[in-house]
Image 1 (spheres, rainbow, N blue to C red):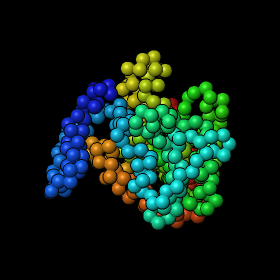
Image 2: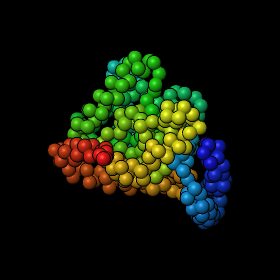
Image 3: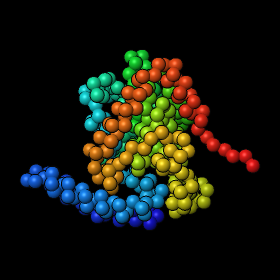
Image 4: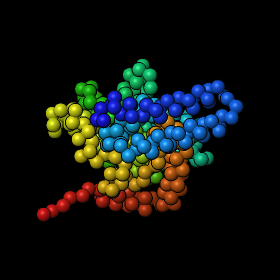
Length: 318
């Protein structure tokens, strides 16, 4: 079960059950809640059998699932009166990065995240969620605005990586990422990072510096994709399963390594099977974290952030 085809075969029954729920909701049938509840229990039972078989590569495929909620889905649920801001004030606007302000639980909060797009045309327009330098500069511009007005910042990470094209390199892709790392580390407001799908390399890290790193249960965060790692180390992309295992990319792995701080549970089958429950789980954790961070003064916030990143990295000597 090492291929994407096998994985989707693995969840075939769950997808069929979800389609039944969607049909009931669309028809507004009598006894809707009872019927949905019964099907949800069937999904739980099926997932209990499947979950023990999941490999790290399966987790990668869940994180990339085309029906998984994206940044704008979370923003739509979590915020009111969201206003998206565009442009880096230097060259252009990058649709792969969404940035703006909205009211979260009554308080103005800045949300920034990667957006992939669902239909083919939208995916092309958003460059498949791969940001260019303009996207990172836009993100930092909005973060600086948050700092000026003392708004907390929430970033939603979901990208295969920064756009690797020649034009992006010519416009300073590496510099834009490095500059963000430095500037965000000094930001004088709370910053919460949430990996909602795939966290790919520097493309994710460029908006992934903060006080707390939360990861959805079936998300991953890695210095390189399993396919890229397999191509480099084994010169064979079919070794992606082996690469995923060795990269330690799952949320639980990152908790153990001291990189991630908390795992947000997903409903049985993954976030795409019950997005609303996923949104509620994210809301609960985000609210608790922001309340805790807002009690810190600026000096405490920066000192704890510094210590957090100083502790990352483990080595052994013989």
